[in-house]
Length: 162
Length: 162
Image 1 (spheres, rainbow over the protein chains, first blue to last red):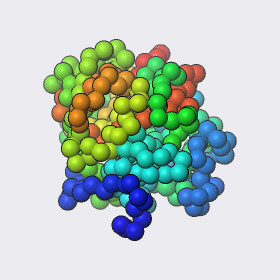
Image 2: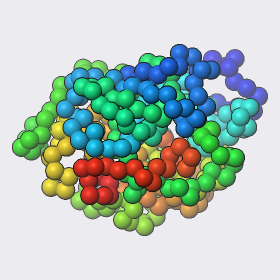
Image 3: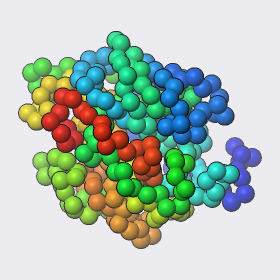
Image 4: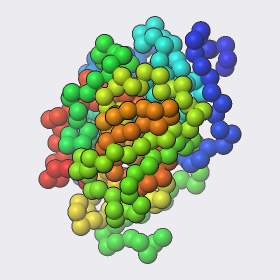
């Protein structure tokens, strides 16, 4: 994939083996079929997306309907994993851990979503910006007491998720 | 591990194989050597913890020092993964996805931390509540624009992270 590297980007040597495994526990359905169609910032879209949970985990949804917001973790399985410095028109030249780019050693993305409803093992939510078919890896309750930091600043950014 | 199940808890059959792999990209150093020593809620502790990043990813920290807060993902590698309903004195009987418990199909925890400083590949932060030696899997910038939802409610909880 070296032809995909832009001037200024840096590749690292990843370890030869993985240290742990993850299960795909469901799929995320969104209106976006290609990367270029995805919204740049999930707050910029009020599209309703659905999370289709594998029925083997159905009982794990007990109590989730009492949450107004959830943290959703998903796996950006099409992304390369070895770039430590990335260059983009939008964000300039940045270290991977200063970005929310799917390109990272562990391509696990997180989105905070608003829960609309749950029907069986299908959750309807607002706030996702990923490709249709993206594998789901976790759903967590969002606790404002520990997760909300309105005063947080990303100094290099003019605002918005990069 | 069936002897560890409490009355009312439900076990599911996990898939036979993993769908993807993760790398441990560093280690988290905290003052807590056993589960019982860990604070119940990270906001309840102002202990300074350190994140020791594998030097192969050093360049990926470029720009991170401009962030006041980060999202840290880590792997709770000692937790069982097959409980879909859990019972605890503190939280009652709840579905796994209504809890922040380390016991979940993919034991990936997330904490929002305040960044104090970076020295080489060591980050000093406030806001972690995990065991000393916990494997690190990701560091992300915290964007208040998409990550902060102060009005979020977890209806079943009286407050605090469960």
